[in-house]
Amino acid sequence: MAENPLKQLEHFGQAPWLDYIRRTLLGSAEFKSLLTDDGLKGMTSNPTIFEKAIDGSADYDQQFEQLVREGKGVMEIYEALTIQDIQTACDALRPLYDSTATKHGYVSYEVSPLLANDTDGTVKAARRYWGRIGRPNVMIKVPSTPAGLPAIETLISEGINVNVTLMFSMTHYNNVAEAYIKGIEKRAQGGGAIDKVFSVASFFVSRVETLVDKKLDAKSKTDSAAAALKGKAAVANTKLVYQRYKEIFLGQRFAAMKQKGARTQWPLWASTGTKDKAYSDVKYVDELIGPDTVNTMPPATMDAFRAHGKAAASLEANLDAARDAVNKLKAIGIDLNDVGEELQLEGVDLFKKSFDDLLAATTKHRDRVLGGEHRAAK
Image 1 (cartoon, rainbow, N blue to C red):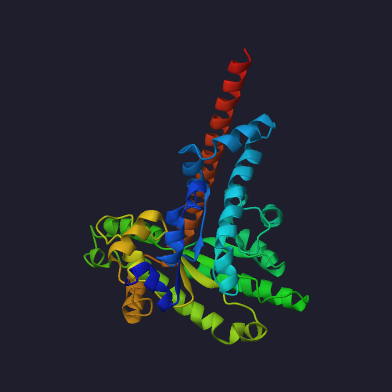
Image 2: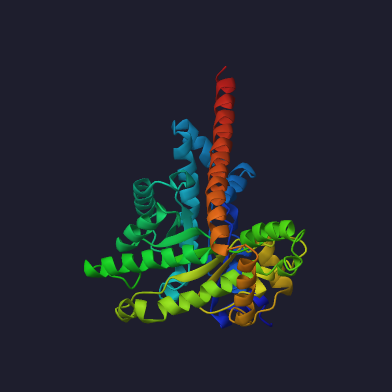
């Protein structure tokens, strides 16, 4: 049987990850198919995903009720439920991690977004999760905020795998790459092993398009050139970041560490579900395929690419057009680095809201269990 487009991505050096975790998925025939037929290489999670899984199903009810009976608080319940899922996912992907010599098979778990502007709090939480999850193929998600950057450097220096999130611009990318390299250098100087430390730089795609297109719509009322640039910002931005990855990690800046066995920090394309129905539902997969990259897809995008995606070496195609688009955007007053700053601030707020919603759903569920127990006691 011919390989489907998802499975074909591995021939171009790209690892498809699933941006979704749910307890009943992990032991199912569907999950086995994702691994064997689709070439799944990893998974990511976030508060929104867990909220939908916990509040939208009965999968967690038995453990939830047990935790309530034990007198656990809301945060303790949340961590117990989600960490068990992460451990189970890590175990399910461990054979892949081992068979690929630690190249694939990772699962990401996010530090609370409430700590996005707290360096020490982020480091302490990441250390705790790393120790509690206790799996070598877990990655701790840390944002690329000003407070997150020194945390990333510290965690990498301690040998903790990090998935750096909330990246939207070239400025963000340069800062994150430097934090990773400094962390690796510090670890090497201290005599720590660097060959199994792995990090990905999660660069958000569709959110850039959404905001830039909104700005272009406003500008098109007075500037005829603006409309022609719609739908071009996100892919152009991402392609140029990949070129920067090659300059940094395949060039002199990282050469000494690479010679000692350090791994390059792979770019990960995040937010790859198409938000504007005017564009292809596989736009941010089709146009961003290349070596040493990850594309983490929500289930709907993964289904769409499996059905009608095209696996081809697209990431380095039309680079002149990408540079031209970025330059033209800047010429009419849209600087993608400024857009990135706006999106990062918005992203922190959105992540905090998602986390608050998750805790609210957990509280509601806990109170319902407690209410039921009180009624039963009467």
